Image (cartoon, rainbow, N blue to C red; front, side, top):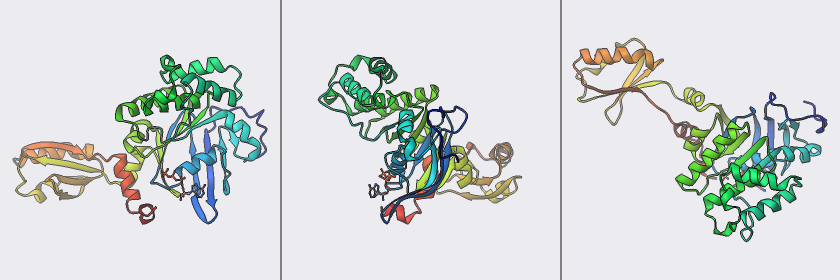
Length: 327
Ligand code: ATP
């Protein structure tokens, strides 16, 4: 790793990963916030960062955002090694939206953005403010006091603030925390729109359905990185494939019908009455199972692969973690 890269010559590359994290650790005295964390995030990716309270998510964001220094390990952020000399240039290329948007409630939306544009020393402030407000669909609310806005709208102003600097990497720390489903859905649509514009998004969230809907890949953290991959990859890693069968009446001799099917490793009856088959490939077994059931005189109500949500994956990983429950 070239730690002495000159920021002036190291323009953000669209082919190199947007973030590379290698063995990163942050301790506060004897308390370890996160330890030996390694992952990378591709350009234009929405990367979900999940984990229980105290797992180290916000501290990771603050570290990658140059707000605090890591204890050990390496990282590259928006093409630049994470070292103090690169702090200013890294901050030019990224933006962080913290959980609380940090607005001046007695100022209007436009006044807030104008203040922050000045703080960030942006030269073409008015044009950037207009672009940012348009991106979050708030152009028509520019003159309203932030105090009079709902939490959802304030969150969108916070997002506009983060977009002022035209970041290539945007860190969103629980952007929908406390929002109602409609306001959260609006933020989801805005994140989708940013993804379509090629912005790399690092999203920490406790809403697993949100991560499932928005993220190309997710990492599950609990001080150390537990798993990283697409939601489908994580499901495959943690759960064997299953085919779930429901019949109008219980089968007279399920062992004879189900155990004889090619590709069925085992079967059991679930508490809700469904027959659950462990299979290597549900698509291959399903037609044979349907034929065998009909031949056995069963009325088949449904026959489908079991669907595991990201929440199932998360709970399987984290629920067993005693440490997480005590934090
Ligand atoms: P949450 O989901 O509740 O926001 P998190 O995953 O973001 O949690 P962090 O806020 O990163 O977790 O905290 C990770 C650990 O580091 C916790 O044990 C926390 O108490 C500790 N920690 C964070 N900041 C500091 C600090 N400035 N000084 C000491 N300990 C800290």
